[in-house]
Length: 196
Image (tube, rainbow, N blue to C red; front, side):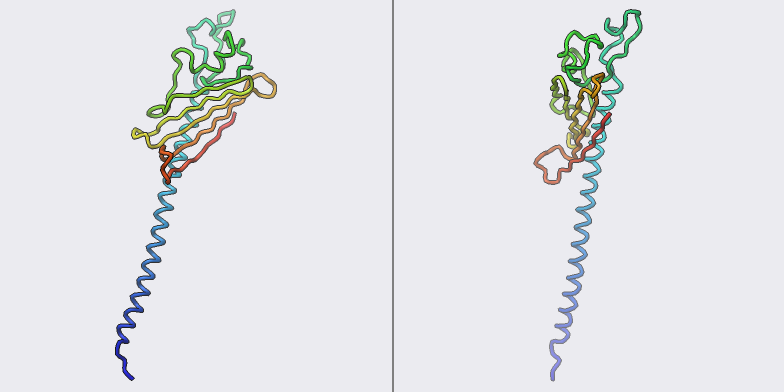
């Protein structure tokens, strides 16, 4: 009985086992890298959505339609009337006479009146869109969060007349993206909704 070739067969067996282990470890590492980059992209998209919601909240709660130097800003006794806060569209059925506005169109389309502007981030992406009727008004806009215009957020602000008709309820929906290119297969979207 001869033992020729035993070392060669044993070497091939050991090499195959080591190669299988190496490929298994490589596969695990590759999946970990993909998961890590996916988590990073998800986090970027979430923070973009959060920035969009915060921007809309700021402009809706820290601004007034009635400026201090306008005649409508004061009641008959000369006291300043801090009217409806915010610059986003409200339903045309809202009692705009209480705000000192002559017609409902100026309420629903406030952002398109005069020099009223707002900004979030580095630049707006195509301005804003305002639509409204008696029950619901919507303002939509997109903006960039980085100078290379890669990370962005799309925000929709909806205001609807509340049940007792004395005001309106607000819903802000913000969607953040890690990449604004809609053709990117690795694009991640995260959303935040705020109601008050």
